[in-house]
Length: 267
Ligand SMILES: NC(=O)c1ccc[n+]([C@@H]2O[C@H](COP(=O)([O-])OP(=O)(O)OC[C@H]3O[C@@H](n4cnc5c(N)ncnc54)[C@H](OP(=O)(O)O)[C@@H]3O)[C@@H](O)[C@H]2O)c1
Image (tube, rainbow, N blue to C red; front, side, top):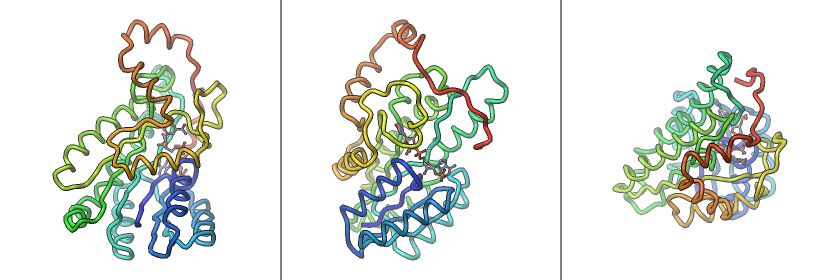
């Protein structure tokens, strides 16, 4: 099994890398780990290699940098061959409000990371995956979207818009790739316990631990699900969200809790 995962330095991405290492605990398993914080990647690489039989290669980079991802993918494929699964998990979530001029840069960063990051991650692998899929190898692209992309959440204009764009983009890609036998899976998580949600001060329904979520994500990937909401209870919330008329949505969201705006030094 050969997997390439972005956003692998914490949370869901780290849990996915661990789940693949547990499931494919042998020396043929190669896991590419991508994120900006190299010290986190190094720790995860050492821990996975020492605990399991797998081999990890790390790529400290920013997913906004398409050239860096092109170089990383080339390096991965030269060393290990074409990956079976590429998971674009890197993402950021911050409170934003359009009325603040300072938030324009934040909107840009969230869109660049959460949307263009997917394109930058998948693009360099597609030509090689077409060839490997033809020879009967598993070839699959996986994008981590969010339930927040189903309807616009107040205080999260950038995040909701980025995840809505991710859902539509992944659907286009799925149809485009079908003729080449490259499966595309969109995962829309509800609330998963990670550093991203640890800062939330409000109640998070159906909050799920990252390791439990990762096992369910990999089950969904291996079943070649097209679109899946995890945890499943959130799937029913999503069905409801899709059909609630706008006036009811506005009423329900009027006092909804949301992430506070923060300083943008993380950009
Ligand atoms: N947790 C949830 O409840 C939840 C719900 C719905 C969707 N999601 C989605 O799941 C994905 C993972 O989130 P998480 O909860 O695991 O959050 P997290 O623990 O904060 O992890 C985010 C990951 O993305 C990486 N990342 C962020 N910006 C990056 C950039 N510019 N370049 C490269 N890597 C970058 C981070 O690594 P570095 O900082 O080291 O770069 C980190 O590894 C995100 O796409 C998020 O939107 C999460």
